[in-house]
Amino acid sequence: MLDLGPGGSRTFPTGDAELLVLPLAGSCTVTVDDETFEVEGRDSVFSRVGDFVYAPRDARVTVSTAAGGRFALPSARCENRLRPRYGPAEDVPVELRGAGQASRQVNNFCTPEAFPHADRLIACEVLTPAGNWSSYPPHKHDEDRPGECVLEEIYYFEIAAGPSGPGIGYQRVYGTGERPIDVLAEVRTGDTVLIPHGWHGPSMAAPGYDMYYLNVMAGPSAERAWLICDDPAHSWVRATWEGQPVDPRLPMTSAKGVEGTR
Image 1 (tube, rainbow, N blue to C red):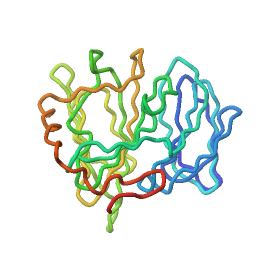
Image 2 (spheres, rainbow, N blue to C red):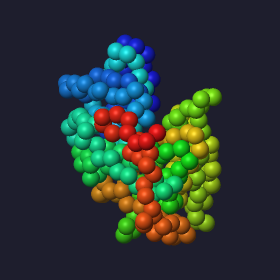
Image 3 (cartoon, rainbow, N blue to C red):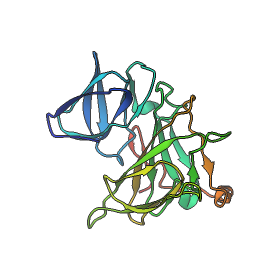
Image 4 (cartoon, rainbow, N blue to C red):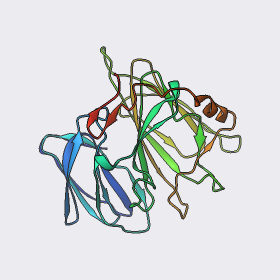
């Protein structure tokens, strides 16, 4: 995460990792080696779908901003050096998943299908209306087998504030007998949950507080793919979505700005 004040600038090498510059609040200019990109950004993660810049490994990156801002820098070690690219907000596929109280919005800005120009890195944003569950049914991606691949994952959270102050949410992670892990964490804006393995979900948006999280994944598989396996104890929940409407508050945002019935 990179926080810059008005007129701020930061220069850094990418080393052996590819990297994204994703504005969470504010706009910026990004220079990757000798290429410069103007990034419109957004007021907040709840105001619109954002644009971004991809920087390859072995590059030198400068992020500068006139008005200041907060910028996510998700990265992953990789082997191949690709070329820098700009990702317009208008090209980000916005997907509505689930139904009823499991409805959520997924901004697939750096998934393999939407952005095939990365070597290892996979990333998306999830917006969950207040009172809903997302990342549900619980799922995992920690084995190489048909329909599943090995991906470590990070969840970075921002929670909308209420009239009396900051909001809260909750994240669940649990493992197997062979690879135990047991997390039930209260999350607030700025918190990160690491998921090295195991079932993860639900991500719970408390009533009154919309939830945002940035998913960042990468793994050792030869193919850059996002293949998951539901916990069989809870996979039946998907069948209950048939015939249920998607939450009318969705989509919450688009490249044009705020959407939905708030």
